[in-house]
Length: 323
Image 1 (tube, rainbow, N blue to C red):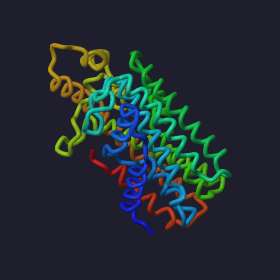
Image 2 (cartoon, one colour):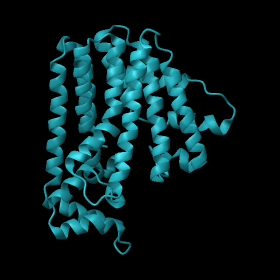
Image 3 (cartoon, rainbow, N blue to C red):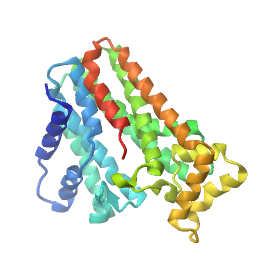
Image 4 (cartoon, one colour):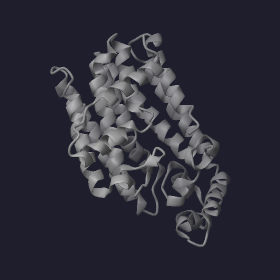
């Protein structure tokens, strides 16, 4: 049986073996470029590990795992355009390297490539796989729209924010996990439980990402305060805005736009308010709650606990990360 590291290596190998035409170069080169950037491969790992709970041939799910990863990277190409992002995973984004028009078109081609990979799965499974893949895809778009809508709103409730990340972040995780369950032959009850597991894991993962942006360790390679400087409505920010006095509310709402204040001062000012309002602690409590719910859901599956251990270990490694 492969270790998780070996499974990750197999996923990387499969993605590296996908052949894209040489011409037109400016359509396909950005696709290869984006797929060779270092990434966690979180979504294909979840798909493969979930499939492996129910079958001793999880390798048969590799085309579906690749489909999810190619789709995820397609969304990143378009996200970088919408965010005007120059960097992605420590490298120039496709948008910065080739320009907006190429990033749009290469992203479109990646979306088609994702469906090409999924179509390699057995014909008898394709109706269910396509239905779930399509649900995942539209939920991601809905989440992205909510996220953009929030940028222009003065107030966003915690409940609204959590619903947004259920779509934008958790949808890809639930989609990958359910696809793995379907391919592995899981019962409908187990499939629904795994959907709930991935939903809670996705919430914990995104909340941790929000937390690390303000309280991570720069020595581990993550710049601190990027969300603060953009005025982004993260879980920390919407929680702080909900709890803030009128004075602190106005500071949180407007400081990122003030050109007279240095980036360092902006970050320190916002974090001081966060600390006063115990936002860090509230975020950590939510992360712990969501992760515990995810693990408890695995306990309800019809399989032996040992069968889910690799998935548990992998989930724990995600929530235990420092960057």
